[in-house]
Length: 64
Image (cartoon, rainbow, N blue to C red):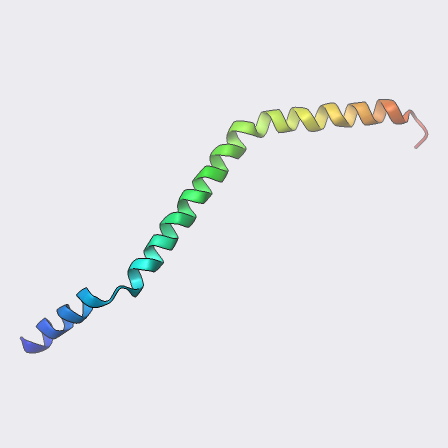
């Protein structure tokens, strides 16, 4: 019984795992924000590249 109570007290004082969990949560939140931004702007970015590509091909002519 003494070993178990000593172990529980030691686990309560150990805070190293808590910071790792916090960093994991922050990384997860950043990943969700990036995914949401890509989904929200995906169509606009695709249209921008298509417009730019067609403008470049018409400006360059058929010299290639």
